[in-house]
Length: 119
Image 1: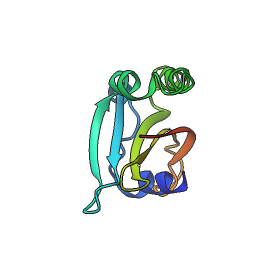
Image 2: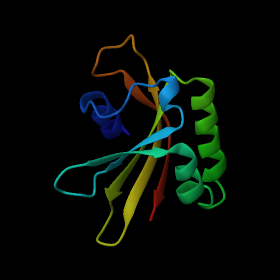
Image 3: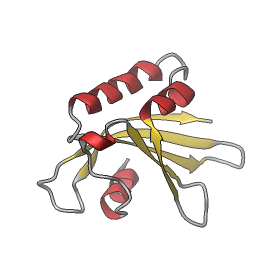
């Protein structure tokens, strides 16, 4: 999680939370060795396609993440990242990042909660 916090605070690629970002997930692919790929994806798509049915546990937690963001649109963002595990599998981390605009640029984002799956 420390890596995600450092990346969010130093890359300039994670948007500051706002009402316009409440239905989005920022997604980073760290498997590509030539550099990370960044996408913005619908929160509902991520939940339905990738997290809802994972072991019957993660779906409700993702729903809680989404609810937190909808209720506090300027306090949180969702970040999903893909990391290599081995030649056939990747690790996916979904992190709810808390945003504190009063902190310095290197510590405004912190991981409030996270989930991990292998796929």
